[in-house]
Length: 478
Image (cartoon, rainbow, N blue to C red):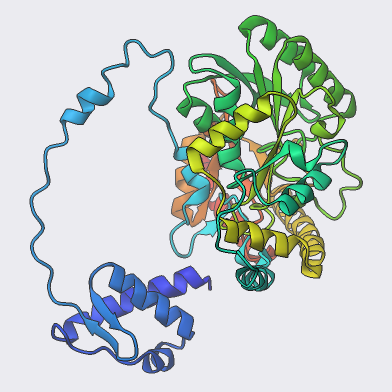
C-alpha cells in the first residue's frame, strides 16, 4: 500500500471517530494508534497533521493530540463575478488568449483515487526513487558550511560544472544556469526567445506542459509532425518558411509521448534548418537518465555538437529521482545566455541553496550510479511487461513504436473507440490513463492514449491495470 493511501485511510478513520471526544478531549496516544491500526509511527504523525491542517485536531508537542474547538461559522462568500469582465476585457485585442488549459499537466501531477492503477503518471514509483540516497545527501548538504546562505544567481559552480560535463562537447560551466527543474527552464527559454503573439514550432504530438507554457507566454504553438525517427525535417523547414517562427522546441531523445529518438541524419538537418532560418532549437533532454538497459549507446545532446549557439539545452534531475528534487539546468551560448539569466533572476532570484547542495551530494555519491543502473533495469522490465500485456489482451490498440527509454507507451485507438469515452470508462474500471488530445496543438489525426509504466509498483500491477483497461474497452465495444 502506498504511504499516501495509508495516511488518507487513517485520517478518515480518525475523523469518523472524532464525535466520541468532546472539544478539548484528548485522542489516544500515537503509540496506541500505531498498535490499534497496525500502521507506522510516520503514518500516524502525517494523519494527525492532516487533521490539524483541517482544523479538526490540535497537536501539542509532548502532550498529544486533542479535538479542536468548533470553528466559528464562516462568513458569506463575496461576489467575485466582476472578475469575469476584467479578465476578459482584453480578449478582443489579444493575439493569443491568456487563459491556459492545464488539464494535460494536472493529469500527470494529480494522484488518482485510492485503488486506481496509475497509468497516467509522469514520475517514478516511490519504490524506484532513491529515497535513502536523497535523504543521506540532504543530511550531508545541511551540514555543509554556508548551506543555508544565498547561492550565486547562476547556481553553485560545482553543480554547473557537473551539468556541463553531462552535456558534453565544448559546453562549459560558464554556459550553464541552474534552474528549479525542467518546466521553469522551458518557461524561461520561451519567454527569452519569442515575443508574445508570435509562433513557436513544436513537435506533434508533444508534451502538454510545454504547450501550456507556450500559451501562457502568449505564443502560438504550430505543430510539426513526428514519426518513429523524430521530427520530419522537410516539414520543419516548411513550417519555418510558412510561419517565420524563430523557435523550435523538441525532445530528440525518447520523445514524450511517442518515445521516438531523432535519427542521426535528422539531428544535423534540424540544427542546419534552424540556423538557416535564424532560429533557436530548444532541446528538452528530459529522459536521458531514463534509458533502458537494452538501449545501447545514446546519441550525444544536440547542444554538444553545436558551436554556433543554435541550441538552448534543458535537462533536469527530477525525472530520474523524485518530483520534489526540482533541480535542472539551462545551457546556451552567446548573447541569449544573458537574456535567459535576466529572466530567471527576475522570476525566481535563484534555486534554493540546500536543494543545489543536496543535488551535488547525490550525483557525487556512489549511490548515484547504482540508482541509475537499477532504474535502467527496472524500466526495461516494466516496459516489457506492459507491451506484452497489451499485445496479448488489447491487440486492437496499435503500438507502432516500443521505446528503449522514457516511461510511457503511445497507443493509437481504432476509429470505433472514442478517446474521451475510453479514458472515462477506464477510470470507472479502476485504471487511470492519459488522454491523447492534450498532446496535440491542433486537431489530432486519431484518438490516442498514453500509458505510463514507471508509476506502478511492478509487473503484477501492470497486468491488473491492462485487465481493467480491457474491461473498459469491452464495455464500449460489446
